[in-house]
Length: 182
Image (cartoon, rainbow, N blue to C red; front, side):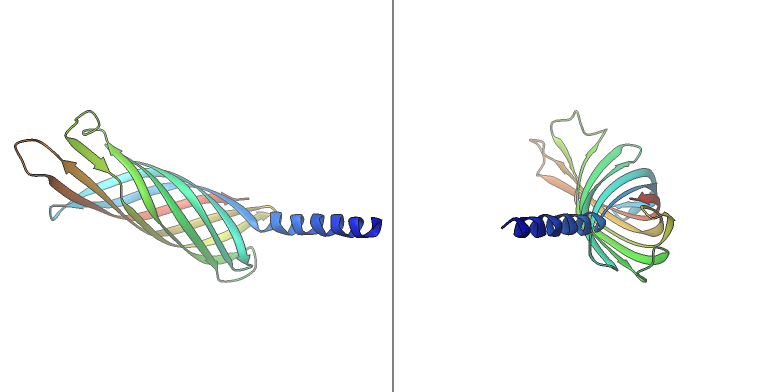
């Protein structure tokens, strides 16, 4: 009985250590730049962004997870919540990678916040990156990436003298990111 408990304890410590090595926290900062496309016109947009992603290594070359981001344009603020996949080309710490995120962004617009008849809603978010993972030490890597970021938002106007008006706004942006994975 005693030897079974000792074996079980050692096995649980071993499994716990393996599980901890499979978890990665990725904190990235960067910039988004591109166009806001509404009513067949395009306006240049720029936004700094900050994102946190929790990743679990399903294989040495594939990490899956979820995250949250903060994107602050001049008048719009977006909080994307997303699922994430990172595919590394090599098992080594120094490796190129492809990453993709899909999710929904909560959002608001400073011009519409205090107007009852206007609602600014977030929408679908897609992001595709190509980058490089560079080792700093055994527990820390730097991620550098460039990618395409697609975001939709929606403006709804509801006033008594008009039919309901809905405008879909699309963002097509280049994403540059630098982050630390630990």
